[in-house]
Length: 352
Image (cartoon, rainbow, N blue to C red; front, top):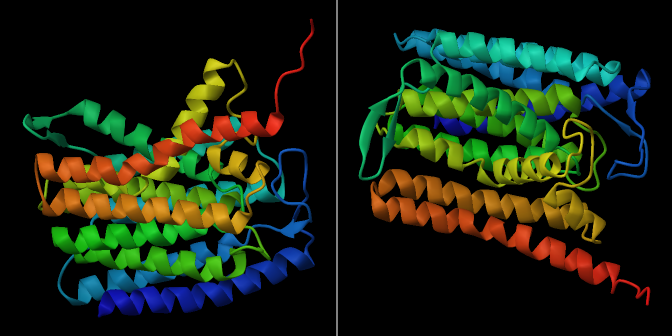
């Protein structure tokens, strides 16, 4: 019941907070002006993600108060995670207002991740089917930092069309809330529901056709929290396999971002520059609407969530098989999209 209240309350507050952020952006002419790499054609107010960030932070303080009232404690990892998320959001807002070098943004992401990992948001061990549990030691801390920074930046890259980042955040957060219930972690449940509600309140303004963009202030914040919460899900849960399951709820975004990054590096392209070569962007270029593509990714994420839940409920080979089946539909895109692009381009002219 408390989880539902967090979800509904955060959604209502976020909707109002984003409306205020949108009004502020319009009043101060903080606009996202279309360019050759944009997926929109009209100037749009940006930095609406501020409303989402403020809402979640309020919800976190409420959750901390409730947890303390129940004579439980909010661990330092949770405080460090939210504090790091705020730092990432601030540098994102500065970048929204005036462009910052990628090196400066990355430095803040890295420092915030290191602090969160040192506070306890990290992988201590890894459990594999048929192989048992293996302690990772210092490598676990390094992998945890890499994971948080990677998820932060991939989520930022995937915020490129109306509705996709906020909608996927709603589905993935609710998936984390379910995993928190299965793992017996009430704080994770409350935080995940608060994040889902905060994203839903923003989505009401951003679902195609969007009236505001979240900007780096919002996408960076979401990515950082997802990176950290998935680690907390694994470390706090009584089910040792839920850490992997928590990462699976982000599978479509992570796969799209990772495969695109690998492809750009292999081609010698400047992978850190803005582009339109993610699969979701290529689907839009092929003529699909923002709404259609966003709904597709919502569906792929929902399947991944179901696979993650199955992985926890059915430990071992059965759960792993169900998880792989749930993620498999995404791999239609790397095969189908290039073919659709070739058909649209038509046959290559003969030079004979």
